[in-house]
Image (cartoon, rainbow, N blue to C red):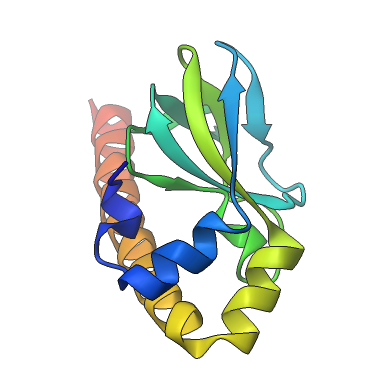
Amino acid sequence: MSLQFTSQLPEVAREALAGIAAERTIAKGQTLCREGESCHELFLVASGHVGLDMLVPGRGQVRVMTLGPGEVLAWSALVGNQGATATGIALEETETIVFPDDALINLCQTNHDVGYPMMRELAKAISRRLVTSRLQLLDLFEQESL
């Protein structure tokens, strides 16, 4: 299966990642990660959709993005686990590929043929997420001024 996040990784990296990956079905409504809490797994969405919600003062939980097939979720598991930046909730039954944080970090640190390409793709995903978040913030501010 070719996923957006892994499609640009070298074959050696995809093979190494497959060795630590597990498939998991997430039921509709199930939380994959919770904003502010540690998440010990990185998820790739294989099929289905995951809503990313953030707590916005004065507004409560706000859907800031919907992730679909090929997208990465809970990347904080790879970058030091300071806590999830959003709450991820399955919007329908969702198939995921899951990587445990300890195995993923170890693989990236010990095999630079995996680590560098993985971090490069993660940086691209975070950049896309940042742009989408900025657009969402602009919408929120515009709604406040109406």
